[in-house]
Image 1 (cartoon, helix red, strand yellow):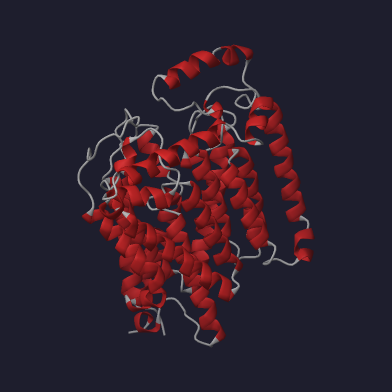
Image 2: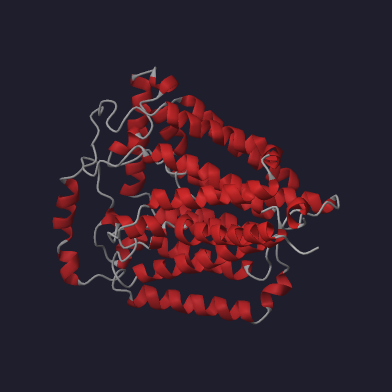
Length: 442
């Protein structure tokens, strides 16, 4: 039967919203356009259109009921988003506890809106990823976004802070180097089901992680490589395009390390280091991260291979925010208000701790349950793709406090769960096609 006009429209709109989500949202392209380059872009409005578009298209084709197949993921996610709304008390709630309040006054309302949009996008992508055509589109979009993100990260090594933060580390569209490292590993994980694209995606992600100089990123890259090893036969890795591409990346990395003006600052720039440190120190009482000021390549390598001030900064942050919970036991139940921790120059660097301080212990437990249940499904199914996505999600939550609002970790998990469900359907001879039978024919 020929597809109906409605089904053709849904097919086209599904692909458009998937590509828009990856190219504009998942790598932070709209955010950097507004925040760094001052373009008249409203990232929240654009994400609202895309996430609701994904959800609407998916529901019109598949309905809501299939979300219940993975209610251990969506119910806790929904509860976390709902509690974020309930616990919101305004932009300036709570005392400072002697902490250093950010002069930028970041908006805490974003921690109410973006989790809701992430939930909508996750649900839409989950339903769409169950269909063959849309699944292929998602993988292709993830790979294209990875290439784009990698290109902007490489550009950061030649034009100081063109995209990323001004600390000599590659951030690309993601800006923050640690987030960029988790992002490229997540995007590459989404391609593990495609033997043609995954070798190139993994090589790009590993090279990009090296450019970020992120210790958390190195762990994520290790997870990615190990899971990748279970997906592609070794003989396939010897086919000429793969070794050739690997050699090109190694050569590019060597040229970048040797000649990059960002990694090899001039003596004049190094001479101004103490002035830069003093400027940073005037904004905060915590130690200055050595990577945030101009340093030589030798000093950078030493800082990345040892326990440096950056690690001490994270420990100080953990003690500070844990102290908030200990000083005010009531905070453990009701929190200080959604986005309260955004007020400070240095965040908790832990997703569980951030949720506990902002919204109380219940959202933290819900997030823990979500990750544990997803990990169990990956273990039982022995799915390299879902295992990689889940382990990277654990790293993101453990070493970052922005997982709930970053639009890639949880939506990627939803895609991984849908792929797992789709594989099970194949085993039971219930293949899902696009568009669904009830929509594709009159």
